[in-house]
Image (cartoon, rainbow over all chains, first blue to last red; front, top):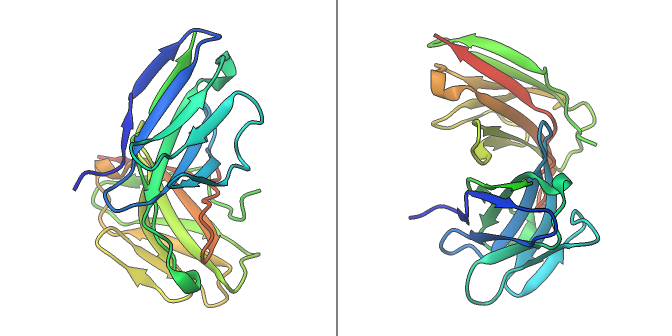
Length: 118
Length: 110
């Protein structure tokens, strides 16, 4: 029973290039969350997606960042025209469908992708 | 805008219990207390959560005060592999976001 799989684990991009980070949720999980951890800082929520829908992108920078979770395949976090300030660890988490009545469901995190912009 | 306060760091001797405090004096009645940890270079790992009763699982115990304004995570027999940053998070039932603060850096020493 594989956990949340993220790839690549390490990604180096030059300024101005595009970065694509992939996340395959745990089997049976239909909710995906992306978090970013800047150097020496805590994790910050970026976006919450369900299959083919963006539910909450309140933590996403307004420009250059986008996310998708297609019907088939992994979730993708895309960063266009990367800058040095995008260097960070990007973590994906997944959870099963949330229960009704406020039942909590746990999110399980992947090992992250460490993006370095040179 | 974290709703919790934790010590910045603490040391613990291997084999001894590690008691990690967390203050959440503004916690609401429908907010749970969650604990996660992040071992260096890895993703956060869920440990335990509770509402008002004490909880125990294979990893840890969670003691929540009667007024729910603070809690303590107990690692009963700390090992070197427990060295990590531990995050105490309050979360409303049904809220999908986790708000990570700075956490407590726990170093287990041999």
